[in-house]
Image 1 (cartoon, rainbow, N blue to C red):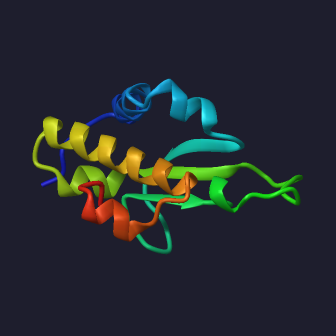
Image 2 (tube, rainbow, N blue to C red; image 1 turned 120 degrees about the vertical axis):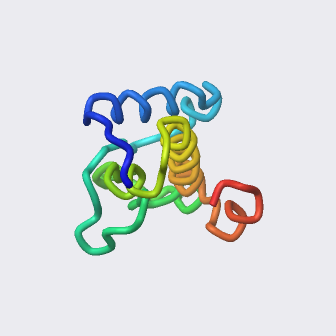
Length: 116
């Protein structure tokens, strides 16, 4: 059964998760926006999605690109959790996971190190 939570409360959890990221990392993030959506229409079960050009792949030719997007999907996170505490943890893991992709870290490393 999905955890009941308002959109505003969920958005606040995403904001709280972002606040835990060290300023050295947030200061290095470049040309990226973070969004919250109900679900991904093409893959309704995914929890988050990074779309863009990772910082490690940007070179002197990088310019004029629209911002990268990190999208956190509310409905699948709420559906997989059975308590508010679980939602808080899953939001934090998902936010870190997608930000790691912005830094060029792949799924294999993230899963192997508990951020999967």
